[in-house]
Image 1 (cartoon, rainbow, N blue to C red):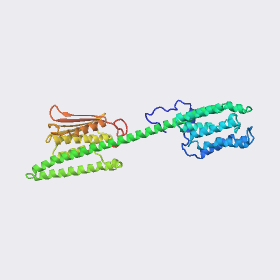
Image 2 (cartoon, helix red, strand yellow):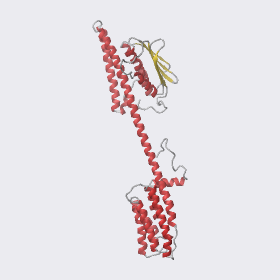
Image 3 (cartoon, rainbow, N blue to C red):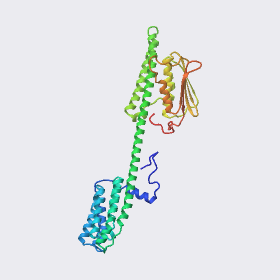
Image 4 (cartoon, rainbow, N blue to C red):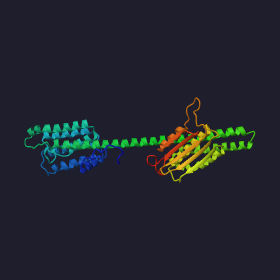
Length: 421
């Protein structure tokens, strides 16, 4: 699994390479409860490797062949169900070893019936169960097999006994517990990675909804302001200058159609986000067309570019256009008849959009909340890491100045690739 950004250090980072590799290989074993071919193979392997040599005479046998076979099967068979009932498997295998010691039967070639059966059972319990019950089972198995030694020696003085099982239980439990801890740690990392991915997706969706709401506000506010101004002109000139009134009505029709086209494009993005890349978005190069349309609507406006234009990110191009559009919309709403001036300066480090007028400046609507125009412009500027100043000019009128950091087309405000704007 790939490392998760900001995740805590790995628990096995300080282990020797051979131990870390062993734990990783053990952790990759299938973690299912139902017995399968692996469990059957382990049980059969334990019987074949440690009991069959005794039955074949390759090792000294203590006890009848039937007893050796029975104890060998009883010690290996519980391993088939070790993953479904791990604690019960430890108890059964322990009981078999205790019974063999008391009966004086040696079903493996080694003293105290040394073999992997009990170690495998304890390892599985430590791997699949919580630490407290698995540790309790391991301690009980070690204590019981050790405590029965004196009794076995007294019952069968001719047989050797040792504490071999005691020393196999301890490392088996430690290895199983390490595998369980590492698996839990890896699962927490994966869960944290999924949560972070979900948070990033939710944040991206929220930012996209905010961007679309800004676009809807800008389009509707600009278009309705143009329609309101031109409809007032048409009403005043309808009787005396019908040609001028007809021109004003044509401007209203054009503004309405343009607004409908832009709203359709925005709504298409909300229904089909994959079509966002295909939808044309306004850019800095579209400002002259916007200014020309406003001139035809009766706004006295001039345009002054400065510096050498260069490619910008889509987010910066769109924000610069919308900021200028919203500032000019405020001029039409709050300073009808004023002269406006738009300046676009392409600097080495930033793009500066300046919109000024000589009118009285915006004023809040009586008895109502303030508009969203300046708020939207500030949000767009802050999203790109820029600054925006808006306020009355000392010589009269109002000025809006937006300074946007100029970055390559593939970079966003934090240097990351811009997405969705």
